[in-house]
Image (cartoon, rainbow, N blue to C red; front, side):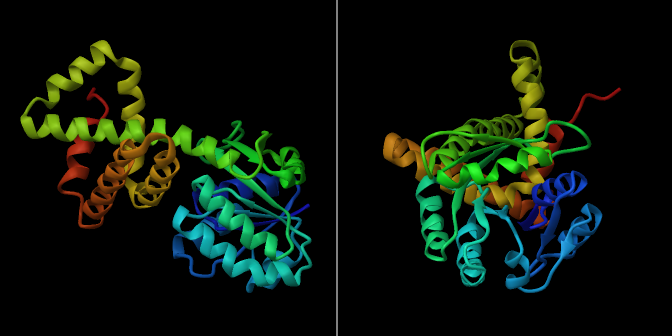
Length: 284
């Protein structure tokens, strides 16, 4: 089986490495990517090809794994090459986007004559021989992705058509990334008021599981905050029909993550430093 992965970020490179070790041919593109992406692709042993026609022309499956804001533009960029390939490859959008967005992407891919699957990834990149993340797939073409299960990916096909897998991802991330935002705000507020030590002690006493979760999530969020902005905006769009104005909570989380991302880019002396102190592991 031949798989094209766009792009070799942390998730894409790790997924590609696992599939390659299980015998798949895995290609990627470095068009518009950073030096860090090139290094990840090298370490993962991915074949780097030039040009979209070479990338998708021989692929059985194309996995789109990019930041949410890039998902639709990527499909639009690849559509001519997918059409020239005669619809041979199944296109799987694996990005954290709302059902409305994934249906727009599906329309672009369908116009190119390709089968389309909606995929929501839950969990972090696979490491060593762990189970890795769950890839929930929906839509008629989801069955075409089943060979990926034999390549070390935990693929789970669900009912509901295109949009179902993305809805599941959005609902799950509402909890995980929403709680991360609340935990960040609580730490910032307590630190500003001078009661950060007392808050952390109370959380350790009455909410140890939550404190453990936030102590992993918040530090892990900081280097990825710039990517979480668009995801929270997608979640807000997903929640707006059932939740109305309450969906603005997630738009607020997007602004928080944007602030953290800017602070980190500027040296991390503000919010980033405060969050690092609050959620630092205990000394000794």
